[in-house]
Length: 364
Image 1 (spheres, rainbow, N blue to C red):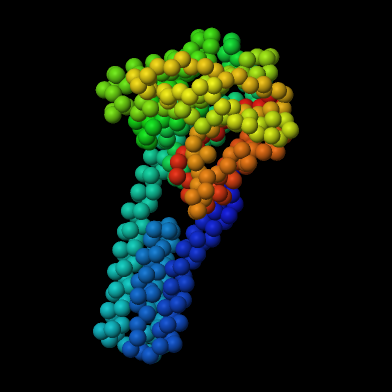
Image 2: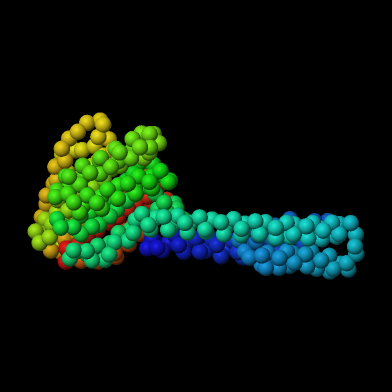
């Protein structure tokens, strides 16, 4: 997945120990029973073993763990010469009953896992349909995109990106819809649909932003207003005219793109004027004005959501994306995003508070 290796190694170690725990409990129970007086019992060890195995292992392993616990109880009693007294029968019955319950728990957990896996597959299909991976080369530029969910296994979110080659140049958008869940995904679909259409038809980047504003306004009215539709979207749009060596940027309340020069220096592309996010046009109207900067050969432009710039460590310190990019002008876009995502995960200790969308374009 491209994240730091430490969290992955740690999680593998924890899973391995958890799967070894039933065997350790049985061995520990045997030693406890052998080393303590007859009046003491190790049944809690033997009953815990199949219960621990149930959610972590297969049905076969769970049943075998229960059988091993039963035989261990029998063995510790047999060393004194097995006599079917009340204590021995009670302990054997207890272990057998708990083992049967553990097998039932295993079946319930596995059924839930299958349902969860199916739900994740549906979510992943929806995410890929809404946010397809862009081609590696578009209009003579190298392109890479990456979506990092804050919670592992969560795929559907409100961050968005798109790239389109048009008669006016390669146009890009990265945005962040207010909220989460399917309401946010609906807004993402509206913004991306409007962008793909407007990018082909509108002669200026400012006009594209206007089309996105109107699309969200129409959808908000159709759905009954902002309270029922996630209509508040921060976004940044960029345009790379063919053959001009420049980049134009329109910013609607979004973190500014970062321009990585061929010498390794990083500078934000600040907006010419402050502007409200998309979907808030009823609060006021200001004409969009694109900021224009040189975009020479070897330079790269990173568009990102605030999941990158607002990622915090355990002490509350923000991640510095400019520092993360500095000196990496020669890195391929895909590798650049992978390393940046890994650094964010290390910075946050794997506990990201928000989703993160990254889109980089490099002029070769």
